[in-house]
Length: 156
Ligand code: FES
Ligand code: FES
View 1: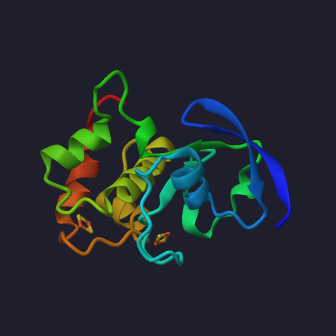
View 2: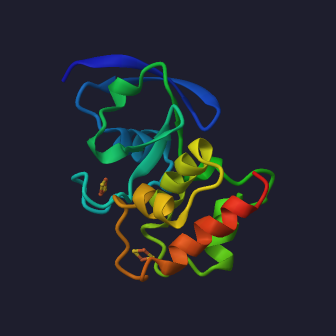
């Protein structure tokens, strides 16, 4: 398989890696870089577990080719805590019990992070719409919505 040089900023650090044309972004993040916080649930664009931010917008990393992110900024769940302090969304999921097994949580949080960057004061409907592509098999979603509402009230 042909390889090309991918130049990308991942979690604030510039990288250059030789990647195969068919390498998926989720495999680049997890296996090439070792950022395993991004999860693979369905591996087919159905569950949202692999959601990351590409240039501030939520993207399903399991159906995104790494090579298409050349010149972009990619952010994963590992980027959110700063100086040992959880981000407001991470605190929200903790405070409101928005996680059970936690498998969907990185994707939920990154999709929510994308929402709060474009809409600082989302309604419940906005939150539910933003998370419509993220599936959780443990919770009833109410706690997840409350977690995002909690975060929206906190300073970034
Ligand atoms: S693992 Fe990407 S959408 Fe399910
Ligand atoms: S907390 Fe288990 S899948 Fe969401």
